[in-house]
Length: 186
Image 1 (spheres, rainbow, N blue to C red):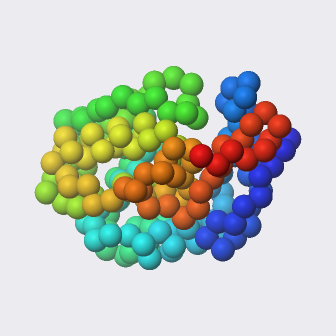
Image 2 (image 1 turned 30 degrees about the vertical axis):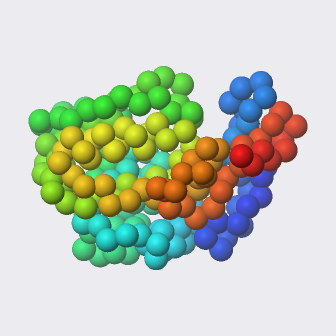
C-alpha cells in the first residue's frame, strides 16, 4: 500500500492511499485512536474558531475531534448528527447525504433535545475532512431547520474543491491522487 506523508497540526502522519475510481485515489485521514493528532488538531482549530455557542458534527469520524474541542473549550456543548434514528430520539430532524467516502446515501438525524440546543444559537460545524461538501450541506440543513445560526465551518483537512471554499476554515490541504499515487492539487 502506498502512503502520503503530511504535517497536520505540527505532527507528521502517513496517510494510506485508497482507490475511489480507476483514476482517483484519496489519502485516508484516520483520526480514530490517534489521541495525539486529535488533541493537536482540536487545539489549532479552536485558535481559529469564530464565536460560537454549540458544536455539531456528523457521525462518526468527527466525534473524537468535536469531543476534544468541547473538552478544551470547557463550557461548550456538542451535538452528533447520527446516521440513523435511535430509540431514545423524539421529534427527529433528518436530512439525506451522499458522501465521497460512503457507498450509499446516508440519513443524518438529531433528536428534538439537540434541536433545542441549537435554536437561536451560534452553531459551529466541525468535521475531520471536508471534500465534496455533501456532509457539510446536510449538517447546514439540520442546523438551519432547527433554527440555529451557522457560526462557521471547520475541518482538520480540506480535500479537492473544498480547498477553494472561503467559508471553510481548515488546517491543511489534502490533495487528491492519480492512479500513479501522484498528488493532484486543484
